Image (cartoon, rainbow, N blue to C red; front, side, top):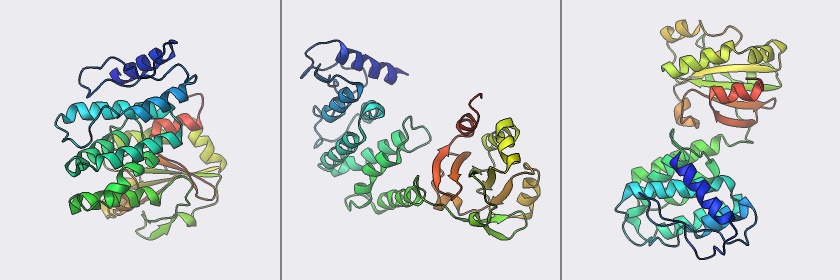
Length: 298
């Protein structure tokens, strides 16, 4: 909330008609430096955010060791907050510039990657963007100055993200309640497919129940427009199959202990929405977001 208020206050200052070029907003406690203010020649929100992120890191010396990691992370997250309103090309350009400069001090690279993961990819990220996150970690995955295990972690993340990009066709194997192997492409034809990924946690159980009892979702299932596939990250066993037999009887149920290693499942439960050709329309949706999307009255 504090970061949102900071972002709003900086943008308000940029809109007040002052000759702001070269000026800085008041430095906030716990940050590394004062943030730039866009000049009054930037007339739109996008133009102001473009200016701010382009000049954001100018006061920072990338060649020096990052010592205050908490302040660095807060400053980085503030930087990312402006991405929401900036132009895509400008965002990616500033990220490339940031990573290039960060490589001036190789001991900082792991810290940069860790913060980027938390701010753009992890479960507590306030701004999820695969495209932006990939721009950060792709150079790090190939940087031999980093430990091998760090590079391999980023390479694995890249492989998962690339395998399930929005717009890609998804097909995968899973084990059904009968213990046999099945594929998504074997499912009945439908207008769209909802893939619900779960584990054994309480959150997954609640999410599964919420989806199974939603009126709008069940109407789509009854009409044949939608097929729901609930896939557990468990390894198949008779005990799992016995418990899963109690799931919604109008769903397709399966499991696969390789799902976590091959798909981008950073938070569970989560939903993927596919069209009739099994093209990924959206991914990493929470159950509540999916319900809101299919039921405007929710």
